[in-house]
Structures are given as C-alpha cells and as structure tokens.
Length: 157
Picture 1 (cartoon, rainbow, N blue to C red):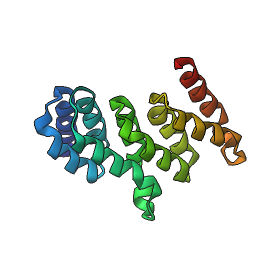
Picture 2 (spheres, one colour; picture 1 turned 180 degrees about the horizontal axis):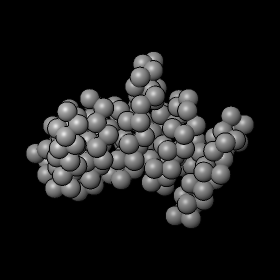
Picture 3 (tube, one colour; picture 1 turned 180 degrees about the vertical axis):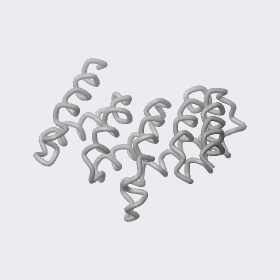
Picture 4 (cartoon, rainbow, N blue to C red; picture 1 turned 90 degrees about the vertical axis):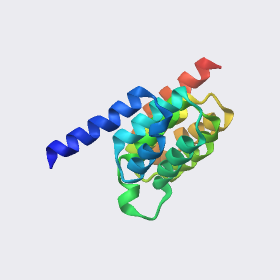
C-alpha cells in the first residue's frame, strides 16, 4: 500500500541520516531495486565512512547510463547516484562518471552528471571532458551549465 511505501521510504531516509555502516548492505539492495532514497542515504553514509561497497554500488548504478537496458538507462537512478558520488568525493568515481557523462543520451542526464558528479572533482580529466563537451554542438542546450561547472573547477584551481 501507499502507507507502507511511505514508511519504507522514510526508514531508508532515516538510515542515511544515522550514517550507520550496518545499514549499507540493506541500502545497496534497495539501490539496486531502484530506490532513489537509498542512493541519497548511501551518499550520506559514504561522506562519513570509507566503505568500498558504497562506491562500487553507486558506480554500478551510474553506469546504467551506458546500459542497453532502456528502463535502467531512462530511470532517475543514475542522476541520484551521480549526486551521491559527488558528495562522497572518492576519486575512483571520476572515470565511471566521465563514462556515464559521455554515454548519456539525455541532455538532462548529462547536465546532472556534470553538475552534481563531475563538478566535485578538480581533476584535469574532468576539465578536458567538459571542455570537449562544451565545443560539441550536440550539447548546445546545456552549454551554459557546462560553462558554469568549468568555471567553478577553474576557480578551485
């Protein structure tokens, strides 16, 4: 029922706020089922606790943007995983985020991955990819967003 779903989602959110590593396995299962709140909760825990399982699971989901599975590719889960990876800031996320950015078909997904994932990494690989994307006419719709992310990264340097 809707009430049970609301209670379940609130529980997932609470687990993230508690930042308790004991919740990681449960939250990863929820993430893989498509629970966006689990991505956020894992991002909160991952900011505080280094746990490779969190990074690996979020990378798995961000790479849905490279999937042949249209349901996974078109879900909002990769966006939420990009946000969580950006919060955590683990450098292992850079290459998968770049791959997801390059392979995303939807410009909104590209904007989200750039703004909430890649923008958190002051790394030459990220800057190069975003500069190339800025020059690509296919990205005209999001050029302003890409320029803003590049400016933030350059200001950090």
